[in-house]
Image (cartoon, rainbow, N blue to C red; front, side, top):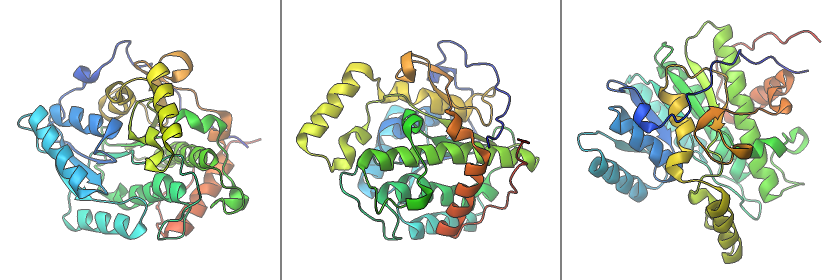
Length: 327
């Protein structure tokens, strides 16, 4: 059974770039994985447009360097760093509890942190397959815990970073933690498909609840970022091959961040619409409406994944599912 998607809005203007971001003064953004790559470029651009950006990062030294780099590049900006490891539910809960205790309003939550291609199966401290826990379940929990802090306004967004890898991904409900069928790419594709399914379902539920907040999935195409290093777990040949492929057909992290920035800041960006690069196979190019594979729009799968995610994370998101279409 397949769920319906929202009506797509107009495509982003051709040639849309970071300089087209409207003023962001007075807006607060939390960005996971913002110490390098597309997360850093997103933080840099939003800070330059006047937003207060919070870099939610696992490594305090990298976070401090990223904050200093943004301040140097964008004088007068006010970035800050806070500790967060999306691979740890304790860390996610502590981050969210601290934010809520300060009663701080939030305008933008960018769920970007991720790892890829862990060659041998590993587990997080919560017992989750590491890529699933870091890329998806930690972000599911963070979104649920911070949703009450988002201002009830159409400019408020949850932006979730998926991937063209969702095209060949599957949700292995009979072995979600991949204890029997682990493969590095199998695990990565599952997490990115899960993020896309969650983003679309979150938007459906927000709409059904009458909330103006938008949930918008994006992907950066083939962007040259640290994730191509396989989380430092791959051998030298795999790292070299990854760099060569991305150098040949990919694009810079700054270009890869454009779909994120469009979803985060463009008034015309629509909830439930998937944005990615405009070029061949969505590998590179300016922001455009991206293709969603039919299996990512299955409403029954989305409901099942949502329920399992709530059970695994012990985070309940108080949004009722939208009705499934007949048939």
